Length: 189
Ligand SMILES: Cc1cc2nc3c(=O)[nH]c(=O)nc-3n(C[C@H](O)[C@H](O)[C@H](O)COP(=O)(O)O)c2cc1C
Image (cartoon, rainbow, N blue to C red; front, side, top):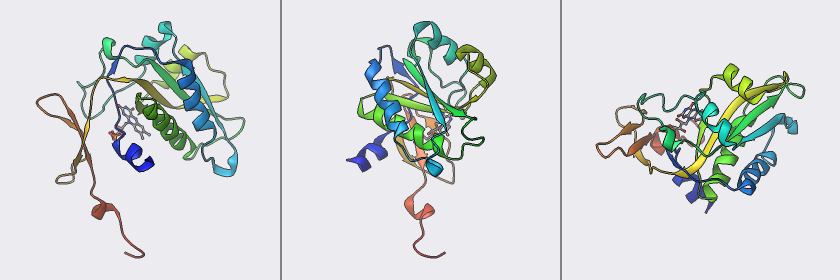
C-alpha cells in the first residue's frame, strides 16, 4: 500500500478550484510533526495559507516547472492552499534534510486525501516573508502547494540521460525516472 502510494504520486502543478477542508491541512502538518528529525531537535515550524486574499499573493512568489517555462498554473488553476515549511533558527541554525522529509510526509498525506501537491524551493523568499509577516527567527525553506488535481502526469524512463520532464502533444506531462539498474548496486562497486 505504501509502496503503491509513494510510486504513483506525481508532482501536480495544475489544480481545480475547490477548498481544502481545514482538518486536512492540520492532518498534513501533524504527519510532518511526527516525522524523523535529526537529533530530534524538531526545528521546523509550519504556516498554513488558505485565505483567499493571500492565495494569489503567495502564488506570485513561486517559480513553477523550471524546465518548462510556459508550463505553470493559470490563475484559474492556482493551488487552493499552501503549507510553508519554516526553520526556527532559535532551535537550529542549519536545517539539514528535515524539511525534505517533512515535505514528503505532507505530500503523502495530501495524496491519501486525494490532493495533488508540489514541493517548491524556487521562492522569492524576501517577498514571501513580507506577505506572511514572519518574525526574524523564522527562515522560509520550502513551500508545499496543495489542491485537487487538474492534470495527470505520467512516469517515463530516462532516455539518453535526459531527466527533463516534458509535455506531449496532448499536454500530458511526462516525468523521466532513472532505471533501477542505473542507480542501484549491491554490497560493493
Ligand atoms: C526540494 C524540492 C524542490 C522543488 N522545487 C520545485 C520548484 O521550485 N518548482 C516546481 O515546479 N517544482 C519543484 N519541485 C518538484 C520537482 O520538479 C519534481 O519533484 C520532479 O520534477 C519529479 O517529479 P515527481 O515529483 O512527479 O516525481 C521540487 C521538488 C523538490 C523535492
